[in-house]
Each structure stands twice: as C-alpha cells, then as structure tokens.
Picture (cartoon, rainbow, N blue to C red):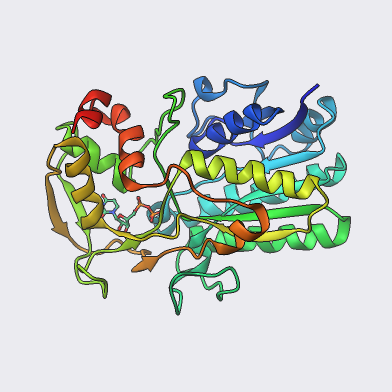
Length: 331
Ligand code: UDP
C-alpha cells in the first residue's frame, strides 16, 4: 500500500497541490483541515478529516489510525496584512497549532516532519538573493510565527529525535497545470489573482502598494514560484528524509525577482488585457525585495523549478480569475 502522509491544511492552496504531487509519487495523503480557508472539494487524493490541528488528541488519533510516520504541516494563517492588524489570530493558529501538532507527533511517534515556513522569516535582508544562512529578523507577526515555528520544531526534533525539513517559500502562485486545482483565497489579497480579476473587469482597479521603494521601478520585488513546483519540492524534501538525509532548512523559490509593475506588464503580454491600476500607499509589513538563492535546494534535493516562468504562472491561473484559457494561450 502507498505510504500514508498526514497533510495538515491539505484543503488549502499549497496543501492541496502537495497532495496531488504526493499521490503522483506513490504516497497516500491523509488530510486534516478545519476548512476555515480551505475547500473540501480540493481534497481528491485520499481520506479527509475535518479537524482543527489544535485538537492534539484527535490529530494523534488520526495518525495512529492510519499508521502515519510522516507529516506535512501546511495548516496556518498566512496573510501578512491581517497578521499586523490581528496578531492574536496568528499566535493562536500558527504557534498554538504547531505546538498541538508537535505534541501529537510525539504521542504517535512520527519520524519526519515537513513544515511550511516562509521567506517572511528573513525580514528585510541585508543582501539579495537570500541564502538560508541569512539572519532571520521578521518584520511582521506572520513572519515571527513562522520563525518561532521553525525554532519549536528544532527543539522537539532535538528532544524526541524527529527529523524535519523546514521549507521557506517565496511567493506561491499559479495553479495545477492540468486544471484540477485552483488558486482560491477568501478574502483574496494576493497580487496575481487581484491583478487578473481587475484585468477581467471582475474587481476594482488594482492598488499598487508603494511606488517609492529603492527598487528599479519603485515597486516591491518578489520571487514568484509556481505552486506545482513548490508541491514537488515537498515531495523531494520528504524523499530526502526517507533516504536517510539530515534535517534541513531550505528556500523554495525561482531565484528570479519581478516587481509589481513587471507582473502587471506580463499579465498584459500573456492575456492581451490591460490591468487597470493606480498608485497607492505602502502596505505595512512589506519588505522591499525578497528573492531566493535557490542553489541549496538544487544541490541537496536536485530541486529545480520547471513551471515558474511568469508567463506560465499567469497562463495556469488565468482561467480561475475570469480570463479564459484560450485568451491566455492565444495572446
Ligand atoms: N501588492 C500590491 N497590490 C495588491 C496586492 C499586493 O501592490 O493589491 C504587492 C504587495 O505589496 C507585495 C506584492 O504585491 O509587494 C506581493 O504581495 P502578495 O500579497 O501577493 O504576497 P506577499 O509578498 O505579501 O506574500
């Protein structure tokens, strides 16, 4: 039988894509998700338990019932702006959730844990691209909860012999190239979806948050990675641990930076639709530039992005934001 993998947050954007990648690689994803932001219809590749990760006893029970030895932990709150306004939610979900999950892992004798961390743990880095040994000084509560999560895992790993891979994602976007899974967030706050919705006339004009950053065109630069690449990075990290590899922390990014204005330009190139936009004030908590040095993941996991060109990201996501696939492909 396929080795079962517990996937917390497996109904969410990145978690659901990871479930598909796990299934393709011969694993059985067993999903727990409280559906506070996830979608039940995104759970397609294994059993589903509607359960909050903070319910440690129930989680330990699922782990035992399926004889699970390996866990991928996605369940968390993940909006930078919201974390600035409502930090308590982030400490409860992300730190409380992590502790409950770790306790369940100890009770159920889990061997390997893969954790969704973030480039937000680096804060405003001194140099670009960002290497894994760059100082981690997050500048918003979301990033702090991810950094604390990494530290909690290390403490538990040390005390109980659990192995881990903490994966620091850059900007996840795009959607399943086969169209089986969408990018869906509620509320939608992310650049690519909002820009495409605006281009399709389904949303107000896009606000460009900050035009006076010290970047080539004054707008923020991010490293956008296709969610399908990200999903395969998780499988590669799991395989590394299963093959006897050591615990590690790795960046998962494309290694390329795009400014907000460059993203809008690429949407116009690919879809032929102009993104209505206006300049607006900076969004609190946004670092000016975040781009990954992806070389360690390449070296250790043999991980390379295959779908993370901005054009493919836009083509795969476009149909979910009111721009037809045909429109995206004809352009
Ligand atoms: N952004 C923007 N307008 C929006 C949403 C986002 O200008 O309506 C900018 C944001 O300031 C950041 C970049 O786009 O520089 C990516 O933001 P997103 O929320 O997609 O991801 P984050 O970097 O916060 O994870």
